[in-house]
Image 1 (cartoon, one colour):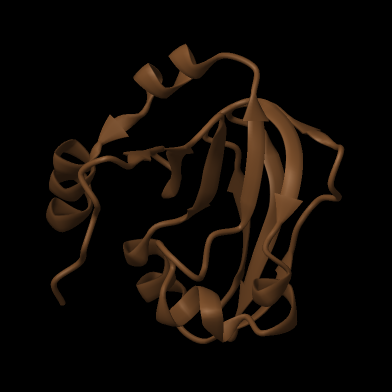
Image 2 (cartoon, rainbow, N blue to C red):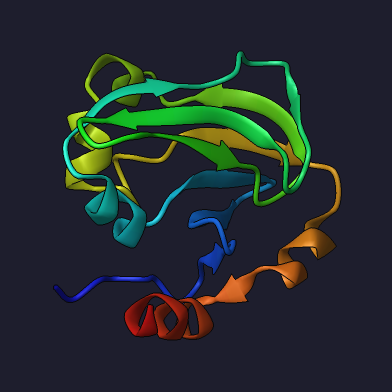
Length: 129
């Protein structure tokens, strides 16, 4: 399968992405991760107002195959969650980079994005694995 990894996204080793969206950062999981999970049946996310810390778990995604923790690609305060994904996890499956985003956060330090892989490096990692 050919995966799409947008050039302006940054990716964590654990397959989450972060993309700058105005003064905020939008967070989700990559198309590759969604493909590996299979049919997604449930998504657990933190509440608006909670803080997440880069590298720490912020929720989980459950598929028919497994339950996987998701790790924050950047630290910040959650300003919005994507309720459409909570209500209909298939939004995550069908369009993980647009409709299937998970969190919108006010970042603590945008320099944390430098610790993540660019799209080309991430693609090389997942295609070779």
